[in-house]
Length: 319
Image: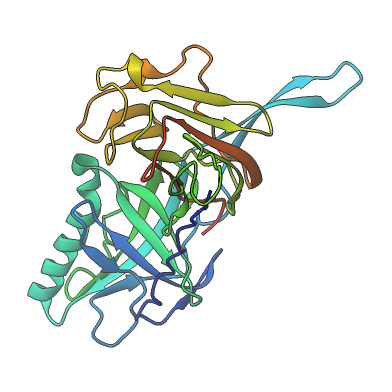
């Protein structure tokens, strides 16, 4: 049966020239507010109304961790648990304008772009490298939009030192990794000679997570299918979704069901909740560790058009 792999899409190189930042090197940084408006943070052209002051930027390196240990009878301690902590990013910004009216408008607009994260959900800090790679992190405004409060500031220019809070300390690749498997076309049993076509999409494959830490993938299954089973072969973690045990019933041709592993959620293409169809309590909606992981996809009752799509965004320690 043919195995079809989706192409990888590479983002276009950003138009703003990169600048050198502490803990990062040369990069172009953009802030995306909750409404989707993009604010360039590293545009140093003469007409730029705001840009990052690289001296003072921090918090872009490895994620912070809390280590829990137990005293050892022979001295020292033994590590018991490692817990990633929320990240704090310090981001100095200079804002200016041709006159006081323009400066005030720019100052207010950029302040609102950051503070609205407290009411409308997180914004996104995006770091683009000259090679086209883009990493992102969700941020909330914490404090710092105060200005210097010194003589001559607040008229046509001023600076603020923002503190941005990140509930997830890891940077996420802007380009998802996709694995696609599709049922091959069936053949006539007697033409040109006795043949048997499988009623399963059954594929053992190796999935590569190029990131630094575990990722929690999302699965989309396209019918027809009656029983869906995904297994992580290196540790035996698996889950089975029996469609007959849900309000939807077996997937028909073209119908879809999506399984999210974080947060755990199973939804049909029409919005029905199908979590009851999982083989609780044995079901494990497993993650993918860094590196290579052997996995198996299986759909019972599959036919031409049945397919499985696994999607995840690699996560990294640094920008």
